[in-house]
Amino acid sequence: MDVYMDNNATTYMKKEVLDAMLPYLTQQYGNGSSKFYKIGRVAGAAVRDARDVVAKAIGAKINEIYFTGSGTEADNWAIKGAAFAKKDKGNHIITTQIEHHAVLHTCEYLEKHGYEVTYLPVDEYGMVKPDDVENAITDKTILISIMTANNEIGTIQPIAQIGKIAKSHKILFHTDAVQAIGHIRVNVEEMGVDMLSLSAHKFHGPKGVGVLYIKNGVKIDNLIHGGGQERGKRASTENVAGIVGLAKAIEIATENLDENIKKLSYFRDRLISGILEKIPYCRLNGPTENRLCNNANFSFRYVEGESILMLLDMKGVAASSGSACASGSLDPSHVLLAIGLPHEIAHGSLRLSVGDNTTDKDVDYVLEVLPPIIERLRAMSPLYEGVERREN
Amino acid sequence: MYSEKVMDHFSNPRNVGEIENANAIGEVGNAKCGDIMKIYMNIEDNIIKDAKFKTFGCGAAIATSSMATEMVIGKTVDEALALTNKAVMEALDGLPPEKVHCSVLAEEAIHSAISDYKRRMGLSDEEKNCSGCCGRCKEENE
Image (tube, rainbow over all chains, first blue to last red; front, top):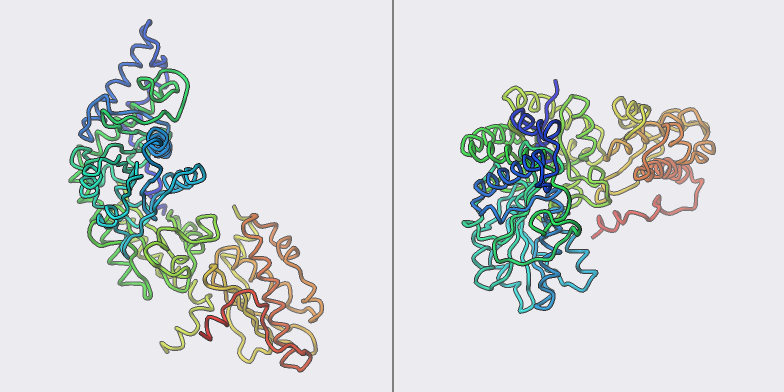
């Protein structure tokens, strides 16, 4: 049995999305910027319609939506673009320790070029304190970038509160909302953000297309230089099919939001309670409230995450881990370390993220195969020896 | 990412467990880095009669422990000491670059167990069976 439990990594593309895209991959192959013949205009109109759909989905105006090649590009553009545009005003950026690497590594890059970055800590559930944001502001602060919801442990941040703080200090506020669409209500007005990043493949759209919302009146530098696409702000021939697919996907995700949240939370909660009940020496990472409806993250003591993933894979279950081996570095996940987990417990983490196609049978299967996997690895683990003896 | 041999030794590890009354025990690595290998041996007449392991770590750590124990069983102490991480890696048809350290750990675990044996037999002047790499003894004494 194959069970996909890695929807925070990516999601399958919906049939309706593919159907909407197909004409623009075949017959309607015109360049969206070619206005003097019909197939160019057809493509241009498709991009315009898509822009309108995206704007409506997040409570923005049509001329505030800019298509990009990915969520990562949108983050890079927002942060570097704001930093370069505001460099005469100041050089200080505020972000958090638990951002996606698209934000963290961009900030680290800017540090090498004379910018100063405050990486705010989070509490044991991964929550940023709005007071900490306010206290970190200096007269040099030009940008605040804080994610809407965390991709590893699902913590939903108090974005609207932070938005008010940013506004009262007249500082640009960007949020990486890549995990949010289809899982929480995203409205740029309510959130009080100046910029917001999205990525289609996280909500059943195609890979290779994203959005940066830039509020009217906010001026940031361009990141991709070239032709005059996206009203001169983002060069590159429009990925027409991808843009159409993104729009279809966001339309479906936001139309059925409440239903979706209810369905996904049900599977998430079944996983959480089932695993905590069946497996000893296990903890839930991240909060129980204000948590992404599709995300569950655990640490199993005395075992290592990559081994768990490999044994799960042999049983047909796709999941992910924040262990060093799984992340391809020497340290375990920066998010798990930021919530205060010791290295050895962070190494034993497992993220299970449910999705649109998750069923009760999938959850039953994971709850059946996971406990013996953990047991088997513990039986092999020298760290577990003492624990066993104390138990017996 | 892993060879078939690595997958085989990971999914059906040989020699997992402890040896009661082992006369050679070595432990290397540390939990902070995400891998610990503990090797037990029974050495008689200078020959490694049996070897078992317990490992906390990734797929490569488990597979190298399994392969290393298999390779030293039946060998003399000196032959086992000559076992290199490269030989363990070759026997597994290679490891990804970021996993080479697992094979180093396996070599060190064998060495550590044999040092323990020599100490028990009064064949060594070494006071401690420690490569000094992990700092764990220090942590435990704090």
